[in-house]
Length: 538
Image (tube, rainbow, N blue to C red; front, side, top):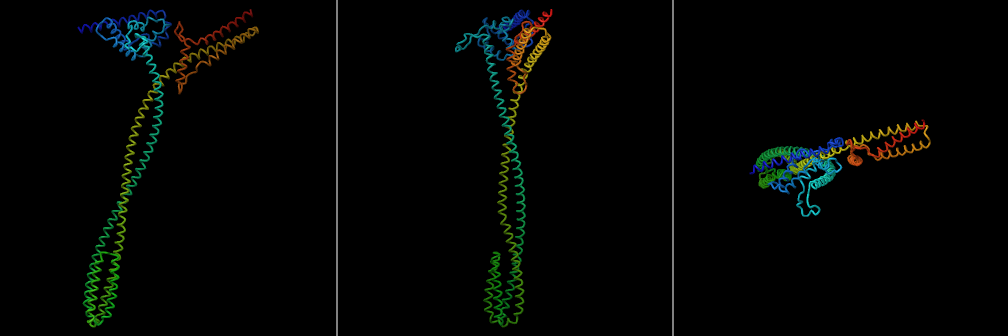
């Protein structure tokens, strides 16, 4: 059953298609056969028949409408109306031109073209809109008018969008320039930060090298101080040994007690002075000097005890003095060495005191380097974002430029058509001017004409010149295809279309009637004066 229905629908569609093509062909052929020359120009510009996918869609919808009217299973009226509107919405300009030609009652094919055929076959549709108080039903004319209104609105919207897109394009160009300038500034700043970071890195490296050198120098000084301490210990032990020997010999110096006491006081004063200097210079020697002081105190007690043996010691005083001189010399050398070691220790302390400052400077340089690195990273991220935004703006710019180029091509086509029309008019004007010049020459040759005829001829020539000048001023000039030429081309095209009429015999565009009348009047006037001059001569 379903297969039979499909076969019937298919057969019906084929029959409708054949009927549409045959009816349209015969009706159009009958109306056009006697007027082939009258539509020659139109056939070159507008198509006579609907072709391609649009024709197939309309025929299929017409078949669906016939099936619905016969009560066969198929599409509903609402579905057919919806599909018909969609077909007209997607129809090409050539299809709409063929349908719109059916609106022109002045055409010879009016009432027998494809529009009339589809109009009669589709018939009327229910509006399906209770709020539509102006129409009880819809037909093909209503749907075409709706589609034309929609396309006109879309065209106006497209022009508005084009103006907005041009404004957006200008904004994007300015924004692109701003972003480019900002990107250049960021790159310059990034380069400066990179140079500054390299400089900080070099300073940090130099500071680290100096710290390493100071560490080596400090270690060397510490080693020297330890070595000198060992030497000082040896000297102190030798000094203790010498003092012990002195104490043993003091017992023998009882006879020389006073001299020995004075000498001892002198030595004690020197040792006290040495002790004071060592306390101020080196804290490490403080304990050892205190031990020396205790030894001196013990020696003083022993000296008091040795006063009895002072007489025996006088004989050996010279020997003791010599040994004491050696001890003084040794002590002096020790003082010099201690002073030198103290100076080296103070220098080492000064160098060591510089280490915290250098460490603080290193910390500051490290922080500045980290901040510069973070800022450089932030600038790189910002630069990447700006690059992405710039790419996006360039893509939008290219899309807008493509739309503008497309519109320029369409406008250029209109301009070329207008220039062709204006060139034809320029040729006509040139021919008329040549005819006027010839008529003027003929008038000058007719020197035997009467005064009244000359005055009359001159008035007509002046009037013709004036009319011709007025028409030339009113006629449009050639359109400049550069900036601003589109609007002027549109005005010239409209003026040309309003003044143009189809000649009934050839279908060509007619010249302005005033221009033709002026040219004919000049030709007729020149011929009349020539004939009058010959008649007078005869």
